[in-house]
Length: 181
Ligand SMILES: Cc1cc2nc3c(=O)[nH]c(=O)nc-3n(C[C@H](O)[C@H](O)[C@H](O)COP(=O)(O)O)c2cc1C
Image 1 (cartoon, protein in one colour):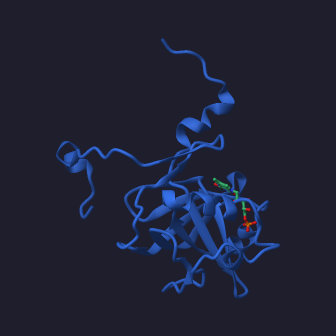
Image 2 (image 1 turned 90 degrees about the vertical axis):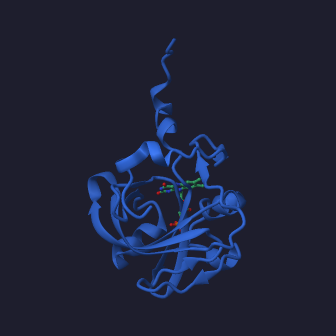
């Protein structure tokens, strides 16, 4: 039998996409934030993320129109809390948290060496009313040598989960899968 769930908890049913770390570079200074409000929009490398003027990264996103989305894995659970609880306004987070900025190909924002994967992105649209940035992925990277490939998911109440069992259903998905995946 269904029981009513407090409406303020409804976001927790949808929240657990991958935890990401988003890097930016403003006037030669690299910064990084933790971000979980991100979604794919379709099969193209187009994403929407949500952030606003309360974060320093917002200013860099608006002024440079660029960022890198780094994909966090379970081994980075303490790092994503470090990076998501202090502001680049006060701290050089790459130095403080011993993160490795690697040069990207198309954007000034650095790849994050500790991430399993990184996507270089340009801002395609900024929907101000909802603090949504639509991103166009322009180059993607993965590190096959990264040992822990379990994606990390924030539940929204301060708990986190990591990927576990994998269900292989490629045949049943049939033509619902895009070419090349
Ligand atoms: C697990 C986690 C998830 C977060 N997700 C988001 C998010 O989706 N959007 C957002 O604006 N801030 C999010 N934050 C908060 C920012 O990471 C945080 O405000 C950070 O200090 C901003 O850094 P900045 O001021 O250097 O940009 C999250 C923080 C944590 C710890």
